[in-house]
Image (cartoon, rainbow, N blue to C red; front, top):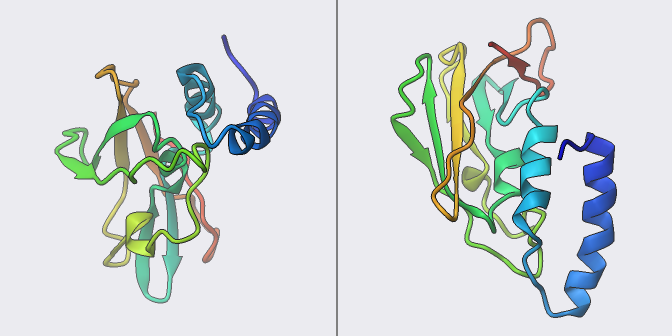
Length: 151
């Protein structure tokens, strides 16, 4: 089943209040699959040039924290030889990043221009792997956060 980004947002908004009333329950994997698919073109990771640093954000993937076991990535290659720590599942907020998360749990701060591309794959809690996606920073966006599919 393929859902648009707006359909995913509507579905997530409808589920979240019910989950809070039930004391928190993790939505079905299909919701997370749809969220990952909806973010495919805009970027599973995002890039930003800020304050003399290049930031690579993993925030979109961290919203999937309750169903992920691993975030694999590599910079400037397709090796997928690095791991970004997945947030601990918070059943009260299963579709969002908790407000008390430290910034270093959402992004990496690197030397300016050091990342020309980021290749990413997630592993779900059952061990299945997503497709592999490669993104590059957007051109001429100043300090805005942006990514472009490089495939």
